[in-house]
Every structure is written in structure tokens, then in C-alpha cells.
Amino acid sequence: MADTFCVTITHCRTDGDKATLGFVVANAALGSEKDTMIFLSTDGVYCAVKGEAEKIDEGAPFAPLKELINKFVAAGGKIYVCTPCLKKRGLSETDLIEGATPAGGAVLVEWLSNGSPCVAY
Amino acid sequence: MRADIPSSWAFDDEFDGGEETCGRVIINLHTYVRGLAPGTRIVLISEDPAAPVEFPAWCRMTRNALLDMAHPYYLVELKPHLVPDGDKETRHG
Image 1 (cartoon, one colour):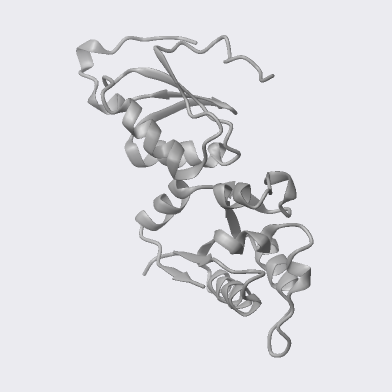
Image 2: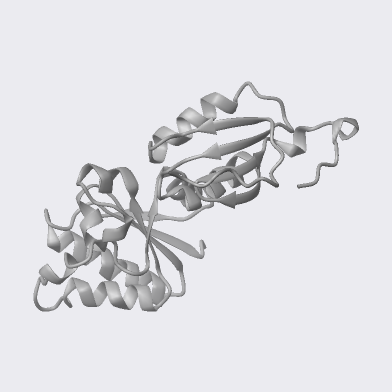
């Protein structure tokens, strides 16, 4: 069984439901002692942009997105954010929350090539 | 105005990825180094904010040796495992 896990999230503003679910599953993976990476791309980069996650709360039974993200970072989860996706939206690394790292394809490819399963939202 | 390449680095070539990001840097870099001999020391230059995690990942996957890094500069030795023993030179710096 792999001891790593990846959740790739491509929504935030466009679909708060999917962004929320992605972080719920990532927290489940972390809580199951999997070394977990979240890869945010396309609209998903907004999950890691200061002030954006606060806008998303899907309501019961889901916790607000910001709370899910804080839990994930506090538990040692890694958040990588697609740099060209940021650039396209006029954003840069200075817009990112604490715990989020600008990254690109090489980081994702290496993680998955080392045997990590991946689920996409 | 960016800092200069660290003066202690000894290298044979440079690759400037400019402000490109992600896969574009990687494919351009791959194309550039493909014809270079194992053991070549190359300085990669990239303003991509992801470079500090991307180049180490690329080096691990391609078995190129990342000798040192000082963003936006990365000192890489190409395919050291393919250099015949007799051709290895000891370089300091």
C-alpha cells in the first residue's frame, strides 16, 4: 500500500463544493497517516490565495473551506500551486497563504511517479 | 537587476529559462541538455517562483546532479553516473 497520496483540485470560485470535498478527502488521507500533497491548478489556485477561501462555506455537514485548509496545513500537509495558472490570473507567490508553495509539473510528475495514488476534484 | 551567478561556481554552460514557468521550462531545458555530454556542468537560470522545487524534482527524476542552488541560479552536473571513471576530474568550487 502506498504511503503517499495526492489530491488535485481544479475549482474554487467556480465550484466551492468540489474545492471543499477535495480538502475533506485530503484531510482524511493525512489523518490516515498518508504523506499528502494537494496540487491546485486552473481555478483551484484561488483556494490558496489570501482572502479567497474565506468566501466558501458549503454549509452542513461541511466545515468552511478556510477551516479545512487550516487543519490540513497545521497537520503537515503540502499545498502546491500551479505557477502558470497564477500568472494567467494576474497573481503571484506574494498572494499565497502561509503553507502554499508555487510549483509546476515536475513536482507533480515526480510525486505521482513515485507511486502516489491521486484523486481529482 | 538580479544578483550575479555565485563566483565560486565552476561551470561549462548556461541555460536561461527566462520567465517561463512549469512544463515550458522543463521541456525547453530537456531539449537544450539532450545533446550535451555527461559530466557537463550547467547553470540553470529561471525566474519561475516554482524553480526551487521544480529543478530539484527534475534532477532527481533525470539523474542529473543538483550541486548547488541560489535562486534564480542552479548548478547542475549532467548525468554524473554516465561519466567514465577515467574522465572524471576533481573540480573544487
